[in-house]
Length: 263
Image (cartoon, rainbow, N blue to C red):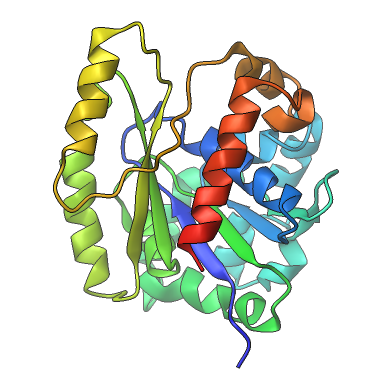
């Protein structure tokens, strides 16, 4: 039997962790490694979609019928919502500003926790993608539970800042609850982001995470790099903006770690 693709959620209930940026750039890097990648933008801020498409195009997706919100609420085939990005090997299902109402829409549906999982089955079975990466919103609601139940793995980006560890314990408790409904879900690892080695609090965050028992922390850390902001301003993955930058190399190294871990 042919190996099914891996579904990886990028999640953290704290905003500003670098979650979306990590999802976008790991996805792009996996494609550069020869993998076929589908990205799903599950966050109402639509920043994952903005990482690959210009603002006017993103607004068009958001107001149209082909986005994750419409697919979940109307039962549309997810395959019909896939947009091809300008980059070989990277496709994307856009988000919508209407995602703010997703919790309410899910509340009205039966088996609400399994809607995304069931919607993904055809895409998983047809083998079109090696990886499906989902950018979850920074909450611990039903929609994030839906995303995690649909996933095989979760990557937890944590910002190396005084508040970076805030909420990590809540995230772990939430994952424990989800694992009762999705026994295959595994924390693939924590990735430390926005690292500035000149700051003492950065060192403290790193030490706290790397000393935590039973928690895997990726070897690759993502340091602060202005190239990331310039890439975001241009609606580009950082490697597409400038291949040789420090952050481009770090995201590629992280993608290799992710790929090895999913084998």
